[in-house]
Image (cartoon, rainbow, N blue to C red; front, side, top):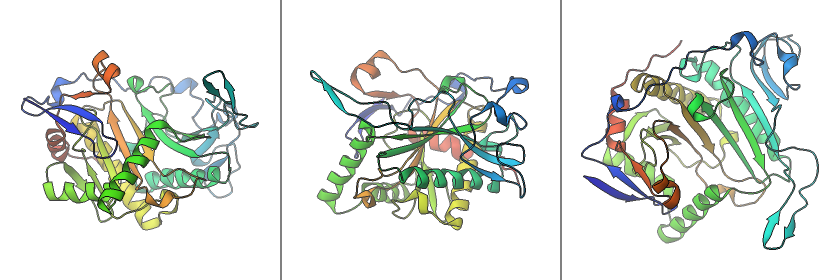
Length: 337
């Protein structure tokens, strides 16, 4: 039996298999063994192979662009967008065009080749999050930018081209359509109900008690009722928070713990799958950012998108979020100390 479920934010429908949900054993296992340490440009001692760093967490007295770092941010050597120049929007007949202006950075998460976020200590994860915040604040100062996305591709099928653990940061001169749909959906929900749709989502998850699989004082991790992908899960602040860049030390540590714990559960539950995660924050330099509720979405790459899904935007989810949360809840995390 399947159910059709509608996303209360953007109105998207999904087809969820409820009675015949796939277990973790139904999905193909990938080999994530690191193989390219000998020529990895992100390893210590090869800092000259990347563009000069723009930020880093370093040992005291260590020099920029040399060893001694624990987290390091550099411009992408092959950027999707370039920071130099003006936007110069023009029309070509019915089409809108502009220069490819933006910023594209790489955050190298650890000096240890082959180590990944699921294996980090609390401090190591918190340092990564702190540099996410630093870069978000710094890039916001460029008034050309309207949206900044922080994301991670882990594993070949998730699109990674360098196996050394890293995230990417891209600043855009416009708000992407998917983000705009979320913002407009959240605004419409608020106008109708006088409440934040994401706060209501957290409350509903606590009431239903089926899809939450981890939480602490400040954050909750759950497989959303309208998941688009099998074993998709979100990490969300329990209290309304529109400003990820300003979370304090206490919340940063709490976020670090739930992020590494849930990634460890995912790794052990699904035999270390490839995944994408992305941090959804409010737009910048637009005004009215207070209404958005930031969160992290984690999407394992377990299936391929079909023609039906591409042609309709109607996703088929073979493991229900209730079943996925149960499997993740039962997976023991292995946390570094």
